[in-house]
Image (cartoon, helix red, strand yellow):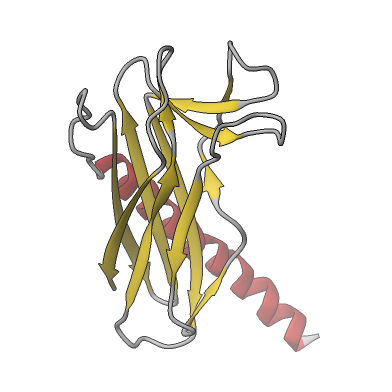
Length: 162
């Protein structure tokens, strides 16, 4: 009975802590700026790390020039290259679930294809097994296209310190 009482007391505290962590992630995501996209670089990417107690999150943000898109999902019968998040983390970090991603939209021109336009956000949470500082390689592998052309696949990565 005593163990149940302790759990009943600690559960709201854990939920509150996670809620504060989620709030911090959302604040950092909103504050994260990408370089301005241009005709020479229609897709820009930036990344950061948020750490709180035994939790850590990697945030990757991308911005796209108006009229350009990247591919969230591509069926096998389509020639486009689907976006792939890049993540190399030390063993002291354990993934807490999968990637949280912005909601993609259906392509008007290609049935079954899902795309991102304007901007997209990708978040991967981790549990830290110790407080040792470290580095994470994070980024995106993607192909961007507009109505007239597709550019060769590109990769943008960052070395993040936590």
